[in-house]
Amino acid sequence: MKKLVSFILIAFVSAFAMAQETITFQAEITNKNGDIIYIKDNQKTIQEIKGDSKGIFKATFSVKEGVYQLFDGVEYAQLYLKNGFDLKMTLDASNFDESLKFKGKGEKENNFLAQETLLDQKYGYEDLLASDEESFKKQIEDKKKADFERLEKAGLNPFFVDVYKKGIEMGLVGLQEYYTKIAGNRKLNNTNAPNFDFENHKDGKTSLESMKGKYVYIDVWATWCGPCRAEIPYLKKAEEKYHGKNIEFVSISVDTDKDHEKWKTFVTEKSLGGIQLFADKNWNSDFIKAFGINSIPRFILIDPNGVVVDADAKRPSNPKLIEQLDGLLK
Figure: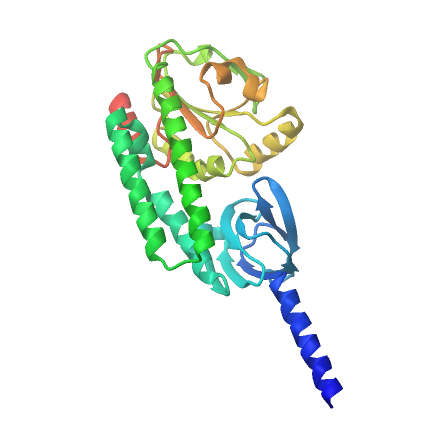
């Protein structure tokens, strides 16, 4: 009997040790975007999880403690993972960020991440980036203080708190760099826009020069860009609102040549409106380089004389764009 008890105890300890060396992760996804989800460490995939017919994705694997990204083929979510977690996630992919919920060991940190994503989406980045330098610095300090206070009051894992604080600081450094770049972009305002002559999805080529006499609102995007795709419904609404007005809506894809057919198919299947163009050298196209574009989406507004009104124009999802266009097109 002692041998049997010892054997059972050893088996229990071994199973417990194994559980501490792995994480069990389960995702239940409705309206899923694909049959595989990916756990990524920056751009490197560390785990692929195949789903069943009911939208259940489950895997047990070993992981180094830290913050990762979940990618469902269309959108991303942040995850805090640690060996020993038994984490269950529920998600409606048609309402991605708003529906993201976690239960089980590790739920507190991951629900915090989900809520922070929603808060971040509501933050007034457009106004922040449009402010003068003194105001920008003050708002950045206020944001850092508020972010740290929420983090410290949430009663979270100390390792997570430390990692997330570093992430906040890195994010603010990146925001400062982006603000500096935006300030440089503003110097392009009131200058003559360089011409382009790009392939038109419908046929032939279309140049900026050919649109003189009209305002031109340009969307620089790519089929793989999630934030770009998120702007499409708003862009369609703007196109409908100003149909027949003195403005052209032009979308310039910076997809690489290998994704040329993907671009053509995407434009057709999504019934994209406006003038759909394909940049001749993607990121290295003269027009793209002239505006210093190294991240997308990017929007540019040009007047009927070919002069840049705004080298870093407001996004279609920003109500202030409609206010601006109403003023110009009245």
